Amino acid sequence: MVLAGTVLLNECYKRVIVVWSYRFNFLLETFMIGFLFIGISFFVSGGSPAPEQMAPALLGYLTWFYAVFAISDMSQGIREETQTGTLEQMYMSPLPSGMLLAGRSLASLLISSTIVVLVGGILMLLLGIRIPIRLQGLPVFALTITGLYGFAFLLGGATLIFKQVSALSNLLSNMLLFLNGSFLTVERMPGWLENAARSLPTTQGIDVLRSVVLEGLPLAAVWQDGSLVWLTVQSALFLLVGWTVFLWSERMARTRGLLGQY
Amino acid sequence: MTTSKDRRRSAAIEIESLSKVFRRRSGDEISAVNRLDLAVEAGQVFGFLGSNGAGKTTTLKMACGLVIPTTGTVRLNGYDVRTQRGRAMQQIGAVLEGTRNVYWRMNAWQNLLYFGRIKGVSSSKWLKARAEKLLRELDLWERRKDPVGEYSRGMQQKVAIAAALIADPPIVLLDEPTLGLDVQASRTVQEWVTRLAKERGKTVVLTTHQLDMAESLCDRVAIMSRGRLLTHRPTGELLDLFRREFYQLRLRGIIAAEKIEAFPGFAACQENGHTVLSGEVGPEDSVFDLVERARLAGLDLISVSPAEPNLEEVFIELVGRAEQPPADAKEPQAGQARAVSETTR
Image (cartoon, chains in turn purple, cyan):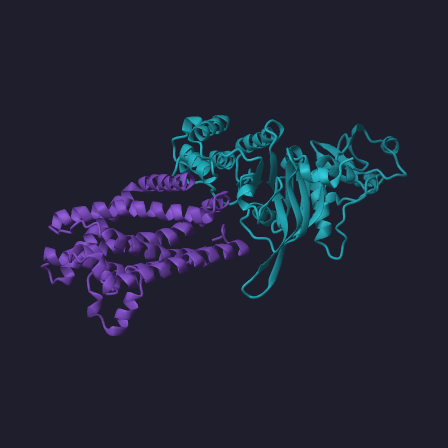
C-alpha cells in the first residue's frame, strides 16, 4: 500500500513538473478548451444558448476532456517516452509494470481533474451554468473514468507496437466529442449510430451522470432502468480488455525489441 | 583451483545459451545473438566490443529485461531476469545508447529523485543524500536546479549515469557511454567508470567502439560478431595472444626504395623527414640482424623499438576473419605467430 502510494505520488510529481515546464502551452490549451465549448454551444443553440440547456452539454464536454487527456497520455505520451528512452528506464524498474501504469493513469487523472475543475468553474461562472454537486454522481463518474482508461490502455498497447497511432488517437478523440452525446443526445441519432455511439467509452457514462447529477435520480433508479448496469458492464469490459491488451502488447514489444524503438 | 561453483558464486552476470531471433514482417529471421555463454565477475570493468549489428546492445537489453530472449537465461547476481525480474532489476542500473534516458524538462535533482523511487527506493532521506552525493561527485551540484535540456551533452550524460546509479546497484551497464562527448567529458566519464569498479567494487559492463578506451579501462573484453562470441578473455591475455616480434626502425633522412628492399616484409613511411620501417621479425631473424642489415646498407639508424599490439588490431583481425567466410574465426593459440595486415599498423 505504501509502495503503491509512493508510485502514485512519484508519477504525480513528474507530471506536475513536466506540465509546469510547459505552462504557457498548458494555459493556452486550457483557454482553448473553454473557448471551444462556448463556440460549439453558440453554434448548436443557434446563437442563444440557455444556461439550463448548457448544463448537460458542459457535463458531457468535461467528461470528453477526460477522454482527450487519457488518450493523449497513453498514446502520445508513450510514443514520446519511447523516443527519449525514459520508457525503457521505466521498464527497468523492479516494480511491476502494472503498478507503474496504474500510477501513471492516476497521475493523469489528477492533472485532468485539476483542469476540469478550473475550466468548468470558470465556464459555470461566466455563463451562469449550474451543475449541482451530488455525491451519488461519484460512483457513476468513477465507473465512466474506469471504462475510459480501459479504452486508453487499448491505445497505449497499440502505441507500444505500432508507434504511429497519433492520427488514430486524434480521430478517436474528436469522434468522441460528437458521438458521446455532449451536444447532441444519442437518442436523436439514427438507430445504427446510436448503437455505435453507446458502445464508445463515456457515452453511457454521460447519460447516467446527467440522470443522477442533473435530474436528481437516485442510483437505485438508474440501476433499475438498466442504464447503470450497462455502464458497469461496459466499463468493466473496457478495463479488462484494455488492461489485457496493454500487458499483451508490452510482452510483444519486449519480444520484438520495440520498447526503445521508434 | 576455481571450480565452476565458485565461478558462479563470484559472477555478477551469468549468460547461458542466450539467443535472440527477430522476425521481420516479411517472415525473414535475423539472428541477433546466437548461443552466447558468458560470465562477468563481480568488480570488473567488462568491455563488450563488436561492429554495428554484432548483437551487443541486444544482449545488454536482454540483461535489462527489455528484450525477451528466444532461448537462454541471464542471471544478475544469481537472479534470473525472466523469472525473478523484480530482484534482478534491483541489481542493475543502465544508460542505453542513442536516447536521453532522463527527462530533459526536469532538472537533475528532480530526475534523480524520480528515478530513485521508480527503482524502488522508499527512504526519502537516503534517496536525497544519495542524489546529493552523486551530483557533487559528478560536478553537477551547482546546476542541479537547471532543466537537463539546458545542459551540455557531457553533463546530460552524467545525469543519465547518476540516474542509473541512484539506487546504488551493484551492476552498471553503459551502452556507448562516451558517444558524442567531447574529450574532456569523455575523460570524466572514463575516470568515473574506473572509480566505480576500483573504489566502489561495482561491476561495469560497457559497450564502445572506442577501442583505445576499452583497452585502458577494461579488465576483460568480449568481442562479438554477427551475434556470436569470438573471444572472451582478460584484456592483457588477449593482447598477449596477438603479441609478436614486431619492430619499428627509425632511419635518418628519406631512404631510397632500393635500399628498403634489404628489409623484405617491412612497410616504410616518412615522419618528420625520417624514414620509419615497421615489420615483423620472423623466428629465423633477430633484432641484431636488422641492425646489421641497416649498417651494411649504410643507413643511419636513429632507434629500434618494439611495437606492442593494441586492442584495435586484435579486434580488426578477429572480426575481419570472422566476417570472411569460410575463414575460421578462432583466436590464435599463445605463442603462434600471426600475420597482421600492415594496413592495421
